[in-house]
Image (cartoon, rainbow, N blue to C red; front, side, top):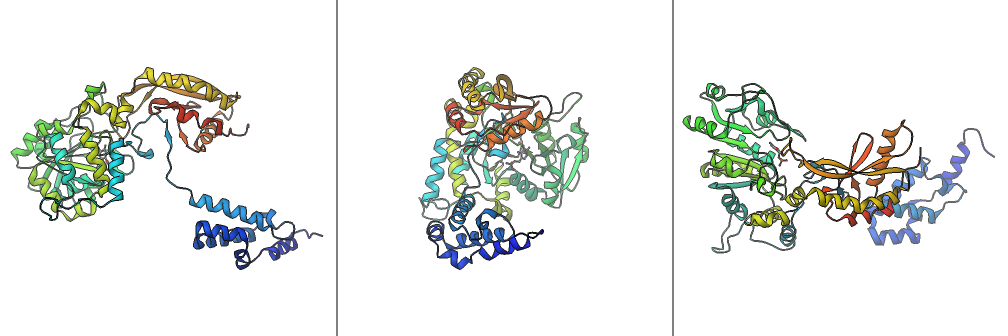
Length: 480
Ligand SMILES: *Cc1c(COP(=O)(O)O)cnc(C)c1O
């Protein structure tokens, strides 16, 4: 007997729902508590019972009596979901090697070991083993930074955004910093030079125009309130055509004539000339120091290939001022990253081995024919997994370095291009569904979509078996 609104059915189902206390006495709940602890299990039981009262999981109380075994399974599934790690390993086949959203540079094995050792044991982080007195945490890496850049001194903070903030706040608080309009950049993730300036307490003085800035523009902007001249590496775009900008050497000369420092946000910044590995040239920190820049800042996890960090190298008196700023304490780096960074910098002592030992550089240096061989090896397995629902081709493509480095230069590579079969309509949705299926693999595979095709750029896949091993688990989207 049912009434039209179903109210009686609902009432009967509610009556069958047991109390938390009764469920607590069931064997499945005791097992869950033994495995996952009481607070999380209880909280989850309460949430599930709420959901059931609200009409969800109707099959559990459909028969008029409550299915306790079914509830136990539901609980186990929900607890497993709750406890699954949120940050997981993925396969980055986007073609962007230093992908900010996917964690940028991969650390070399020696850095991972150093990081784990530092995590497991006390270290001499701020302790001088010779004198037995308090030491400086930055010294573990600063001597390497000086050696590798020719700078007199170095300091290290959380990331390059923090480095820029610290430089500006220390040198330019309540004063003016002169920057070319062509360099007022925004980097992804809300890093905008004008905003950082404001937060650092400096007044930004813009000079020149978007495409052309001359030495005289800087010179005429210098006044009694000027604290510094600043160069910003226009990492993620390039102005081409009728352009002019002032090089560091001329700008340093002008700054020094007025007793002002020239500071430079190098962005990605490298410690070696990438041309030696057949890659396009990117300005190095050493070049900046040699050109007379007083402070240079750059990221640890971009082209340098280390952990997230902001590195500042330059004049000793200025670095000392940065270190005395209370902000430095708030931006400092922990022992884990210092350990990893020290290990990475040590690799730079031998640039010949760098291209094999530093993963970021190794991936950037991979030759197109090796990548093509990987594509050939993978294609049959991919075709099998797709079971005739899509066409697979090997296509030429270009990888990007990412993280704003070298925007105009791209690296020749190869991709597997997957085009779902079917008529033209909804092809966008079909390729989205296919991309989602690859993201649902136990080791999610991230590609990019271009012209209704799913592209897997294989530059970052050194071992095709890692991808191939996943493929039997691919769950194809239902045909539409
Ligand atoms: C990437 C970048 C930053 C920010 O560096 P993070 O290490 O990500 O904080 C700042 N300036 C420039 C020019 C950059 O390219």
